[in-house]
Length: 133
Image (cartoon, rainbow, N blue to C red; front, side):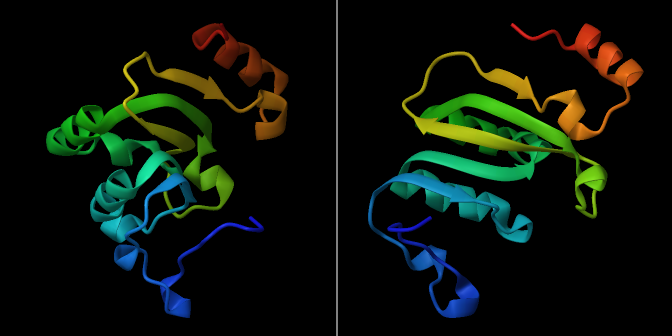
């Protein structure tokens, strides 16, 4: 992302040392310290987009309450099962948008079935279960 600031601990730029306010954070955060990473993001950003196993944001009552006190989640875009995307897990992977001060409903969208590699029959079944608005 040309022109943007970035952090990479392997290159001596530790995100936990970042203190400046930013409009956006876009990341695939380290899962081993996810809660701490998100909490720090909530302190410095207006908007956050993480590519994560979606269940990460629902793993604890405390974390859910912190997210909704700060703002909320306007959208979750489900990309697919982790195992089908090369992740070593089977949980659903998605781009989750967190927004400071957000108070509306969370929209959930799904990657187009033809992109996800579904057979036409499976795509039709998924469309019936999860109709698009």
